[in-house]
Amino acid sequence: MTPAPPKNFHTSNPETETAIDRTIPDFPAAQLSDEDKYFTHHKPPSYLPDLEDEVKEFIEYHQRNTHKRIVLVTSGGTTVPLENNTVRFIDNFSAGTRGATSAEYFLENGYAVIFLHREFSLLPYSRHYSHTTNCFLDYMTEVNNKVEINPQFADEMLIVLRKYKQAKESNSLLSIPFTTVNQYLYTLKSVSQIMEIVEKKAIFFLAAAVSDFFLPQSRMPTHKIQSQESGGKLEVNLEPVPKFLSRLVDNWAPSALIVSFKLETDNSILIKKAKNALDRYQHQLVIGNLLQTRKKEVVFVTPSGENSWIKLTDDQISKEVEIESLIIPRVIEIHTQWIENK
Ligand code: 9Z3
Image 1: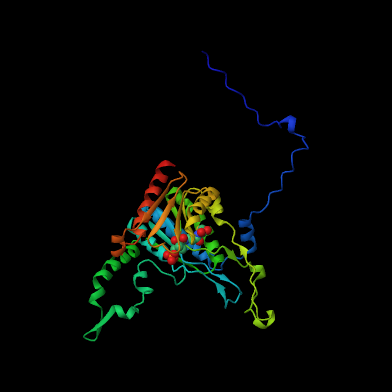
Image 2: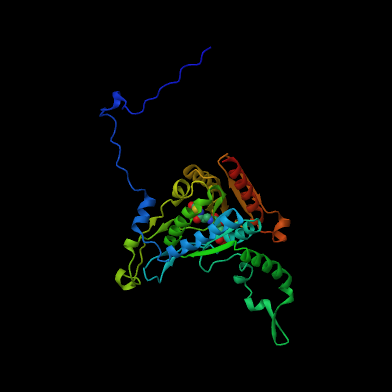
C-alpha cells in the first residue's frame, strides 16, 4: 500500500463559518490575575536587590564548582502587620522545626540549601541548642577558670558541630530571612526565578506556615491604631492571600520539583484538601500533616492518586528519631525520578 500523501495544514485563514458569528460570547480583555495584582499593589522590601545578588552568587558558585542539586526550604510562620509602624501583627504557631530539621537532612544528602526562614525562628544546627528549655549557658561548665562544654552534652555537640562546619565550609547553606507575608511572597518570587537556571535540579520544599489572610498596604494605617478612635473595639477586615503556588508552578519555576505542605487540624478533611491542592496547582507532591500529630506522621499525596503515610513507630519515638530523617530521603527519591523522567 502506498502511504497517504502528507496533509497540508493551513493556519493563516480564519475559519470562515464562525469568523463573524455573533453568538459566540466576547473574549474578555486580558486581566491581571490576583497574584499579579498583588505585586503591582504592594511594594517589595527595600533589601530585595541585595538579597537577589547573594542568591545568584550562591547558585552560580554551585553551578560552577559543585554541581549540587539545590533546594529552597521555606520555614516558620509569616506575620501579617496591622500597622505600618508595626506594634501589632497577626502570627501563627510555627517555630520552624520542620524546615530547620529538613534543611539538615537535605545537606546531609548532598544538596545545597537556601533556607528562607522567619527571622529568629529555628535554624539548622543551632536549633539543637537555641530554643530548648535549657539556657545556652547550661551547656557549659567552668574548669580551672575556663569555660568548657559540659561533658554531659559534649559528645552529641561534637556531632552537630562537625555537620555544621561541613555545611559552612562547603558553602552549602544560605540562610535568608523574612518576617511579614509580603516579604515572604516577594522573596519567594525572586529566588524561584533565579533558581530556574538550575532547571530540574531544583526542589521547592515549602514548609513555611504562610498566612491565608493579609491586610493590603493600601488600607494599612501608618501609625499605631488608637483604641479611643474606634470605641475601644478593633475590627480587622483581611483579604485572602493570592494563590502564589500557581505562579510558582506555572511561571516562576516551571522546571523544578515542587513540594507543598497541607496543614489541617481535622483529620477527616486532610487528604481531600491535599488532593485539591494537587489538582488545582498541578505540582508534584503535597505532604499532608495535622497540627496535633505533625511530628510523628505525615502523608505523601502524589498525582498518581496514591497516599502513602510515613509514621514513626513507638520504638522510633522513644529513640527520638526525627520524622524528617524519613521524609527527606523519600522526597529525594521523587526528585531523582523527576530528573530522570523529564
Ligand atoms: C506545614 O504544614 C508544616 O509542616 C508545619 C510545621 C507548619 C506544620 P513547625 O514549624 O510546623 O515544625 O512547628 N507547612 C505548610 C503550612 C501552610 O501554610 N500550607 C499552605 C496551606 O495549607 C499551603 S503552602 O494552604
